[in-house]
Image (cartoon, rainbow, N blue to C red):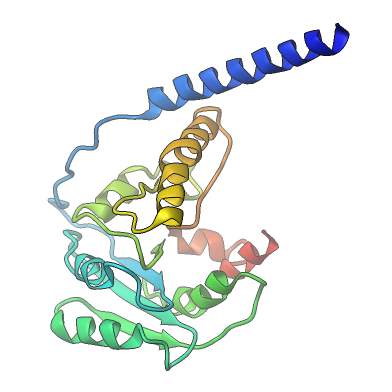
Length: 224
């Protein structure tokens, strides 16, 4: 009898926690609106894109990265090995969009057990601007991508992280990943933010470079 009561109380508590998280997340959700390009002077931005292998929609994601509405930005693509098959598409894209400053950096900096972080180090250190975006190669950037990230920055902000939406899955495990990203992941990320708990997912992040550099730089992230 006692075990049954305990199980019932635990189930009720879990249900209430889940309902509360749904409500908190729903308060943070709003229909995304298009943000116009900056009318005045806007700070330049460096976008670091760690890449490995040719992913589905690679050509489309590359084209989007070169077609943003932000007036001044550079693209820094990072790969670990020169023979990576994604080198060709990146090189072709850089040639097709000469108006956007872009570079491809190759190298393997072993600062942690995280291959993506190791791949990002050279891009971070080569970034020319004080505002740096780290964006995974499969992020399909909207034209106002930079505007949304910059608009979220506040005087007491240390990092802006945009919640990803999974789309166009191809295969069972891709369906599972999309389901996770668009339900549990998104809900708990919004819930944590609503409660004032810092949480970041590495898929799409905006950093103030001098701020992070003053606190150990990108290498400090290896502690996580």
